Length: 132
Image (cartoon, rainbow, N blue to C red; front, side, top):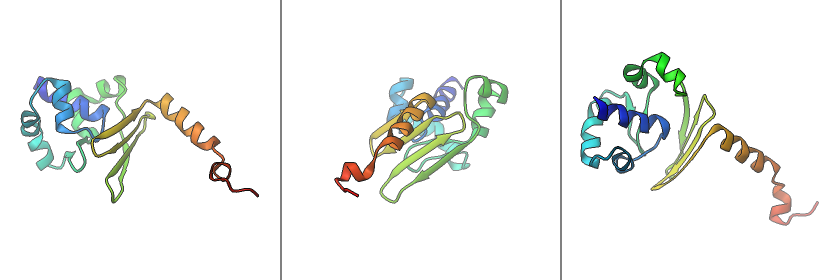
């Protein structure tokens, strides 16, 4: 039970995380991680397309709704995946995840706000060399 809790915490904190990344964090083999998650994937409670993503109900089952809220776990996720395998996840607590292949960026709500401010300040015409 402790292993699955650790695994679920990894998945909740880093949506799109791979089995090998979970294995490194939890000090398990990747095969063991896959075996432990198989029932949840088969039931559709964890998505495993480009890494693992847990539904809030799975977190509630192991941590309880009160613990999940107090620990900062978000209750909802907005996620999308492009045709070329870019996975983006945005959480109700402001966290942002971007995953492509073996590369991943996980931003806290503060980091996400900084990134969005930076992107919003870019004058694309100026960057592209277009004059008006």
